Length: 148
Image 1 (cartoon, helix red, strand yellow):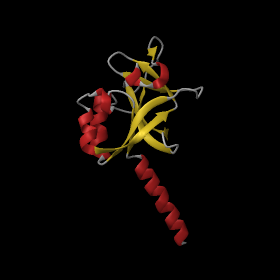
Image 2 (image 1 turned 120 degrees about the vertical axis):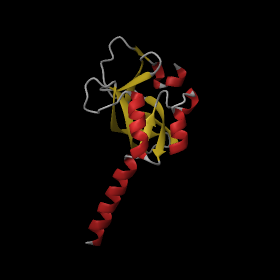
Image 3 (image 1 turned 45 degrees about the horizontal axis):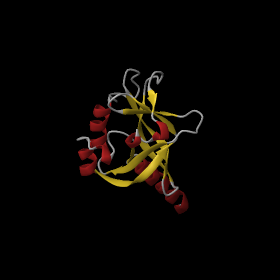
Image 4 (image 1 turned 90 degrees about the vertical axis):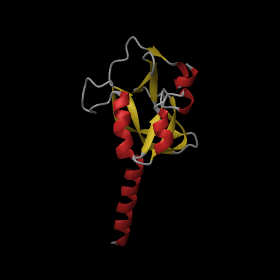
């Protein structure tokens, strides 16, 4: 009986920690220098670099990511552990134009996706995925917004 409770506890901890991780690939990255990054500096801890199996596009002043159906794409980003996810995510949702994850008009939707950390570990993290078609957008070769 105790083993069952322990397994359930570990599942709960894993789900909780997954909801606290955020993968950022564009204007939220440190080197971009956008003022919104201050939010992460004050309310999150840098975990490390990672990659998401997706395709990166140039939307103009910022990038967009969509999942890669072929599985060959790779988007470079940073992973952060949010200290107060319930407070930080609504602010980021507004910034990202993600007013309602079910809203077809929203520019992005926030979803949990697998991320491969540079140390080889796989983590589940929130990511903002582009919620519109990508036809006509310029792909960013190499999947790194900083090297566009």
